[in-house]
Image (cartoon, rainbow, N blue to C red; front, side, top):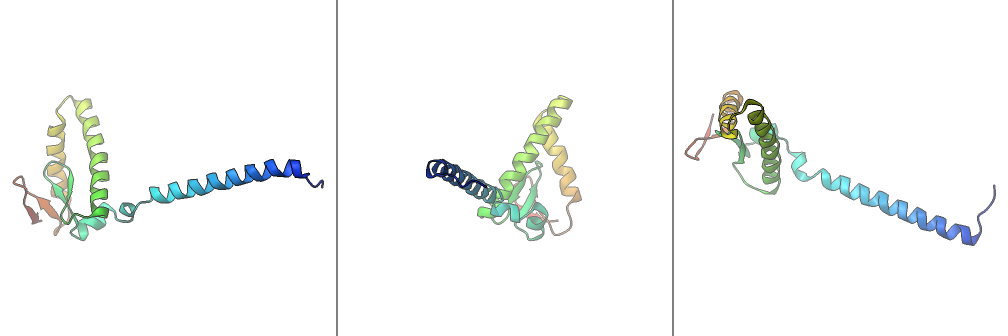
Length: 125
């Protein structure tokens, strides 16, 4: 095995440092992607009384806070994307899809889950 000269070793070390730095950045980004909100899922949040279902097919924080708010934003964005897709397929307003799905979701959640009434009040199912 040939030992690299100093002139060959310097660029090799620089590439190695760049690779290590890129790997570190990748790990940091991956760790950030697993945010605290990911630690709490919707079922857990509902069971703990942190999140409730709304009549319009969206969720809302019963007890607002960073982790809960992030979870609510993510769930609502995912739901709205699906509601828009369904509405477009069926040629109906998004609000109609939301209302129908909201009724179904409220009907299916377990007893004790917080549900927001059309007047904006929380009640336990």
